[in-house]
Length: 378
Image 1 (cartoon, one colour):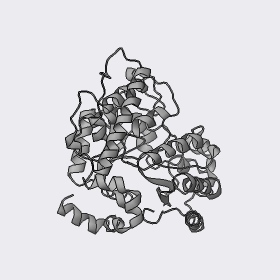
Image 2 (cartoon, rainbow, N blue to C red):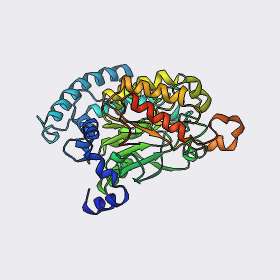
Image 3 (cartoon, rainbow, N blue to C red):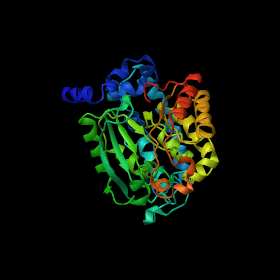
Image 4 (cartoon, helix red, strand yellow):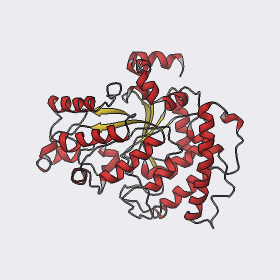
């Protein structure tokens, strides 16, 4: 980051500078911090240096064979990552192979997207034939906007945010409903090469990370992975997601994401179905949160919903404390009635208002009682 950007950052978000004086933040986001400052390479660059013996794009390979190649390469990837973490080797000392672990991930992702099982809905849409899934995304990557986001959590600002179209959730209160549900296909169609140039430009002009968000990035996973093939700039990869992806998608992601920014919305499957129209939310999201926590730094977002402090906030915070205790947590008070809630308030009387001061106080007290670190990012 240049001096001009640093001065701008100090004036716009002084907390984005001061936050790194907090030892808890430095410890819990140590890998992200090292990549952000270019003292370590982003994980995708290591995946690009991890060799495989076969051409993963060969037409004769089944997805089972690709997974075999993938899992074998991941063992080597973890060895290299460990040596890089210790400072024993540099990324520059590793030769670029003809085919890499990243290539295998790309090949698998394109097999998973048609018939589609990238997210836990597993709707089976034939996206390669131009038929969109439940998420409204087909064979094209749709980007609505990208910019330096100054409103994210302090350690992330300025965040190189890329907003993708479409979403596998149908949240009645979605604040980005225009790009997720109403007009998800109205954005710019971009190739993976173009997506790589967007990331490169954002990073070189001051972004601390590339923030894949939406909508929801999961339907765009094949395009995002392929974009990394064309990206050489050291850029921390951030996954900003509802975390309702399939286990297969998680396996593809864990070796390329440096910092996770997941939503953890509900403590109740009933609430998740009524308000977001997804099944088995708790089981899927807790599974994916565990995998993310084991494979990268993490800031969890929990949006406090009015009248849902006991059924959702309490259970979510208790789970975080017991299963991802080193994660930072943003306890968010930004909820407001939007989208269907504002249009049909009689259908959603429980969430047809903002959370009260008392509800937020209770949420913060719960977090403090559980030993959760939330103040630096909330």
